[in-house]
Image 1: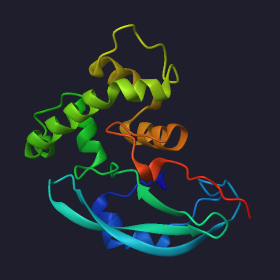
Image 2: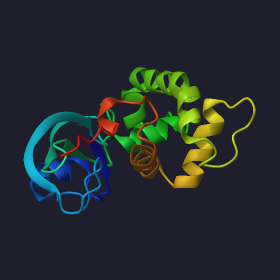
Image 3: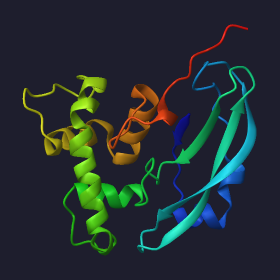
Length: 185
């Protein structure tokens, strides 16, 4: 499973400080919800862009639940699930701030992110319902985007909310966001 955790660090600071080694496990397992059930397991690598449009390798902390056996990765909120471009740049692009240099560098990729969001929107709305305010009869991606960011305050907060409460994100419903069946002991 995946958890999004809030951090004030930039991707560069996260990497330089080896912050992945300082990430604490969530208090409860995201799957079985047992308290203090997660133990340090390992890390995995992934790439994320920086504010200067560089691509940076970071490590993501992973934990293991000693009760239900699932693994939980803790993704910093500056990174979007399964996306290279960092969260603030995605948010700027979706807010049509296309003259910003970090947005300019990734325009083709960011356009593909928007298309993926539009494609996922009907399923996303089925999952979240009216949690972020009334949904119009004919919802569009731009309208829902504005509503989501207004309700949550930022894409980072919205991603955390979507992953934790609804087990999805803007771009798809992935296996890592889904609960696993619990087996009787």
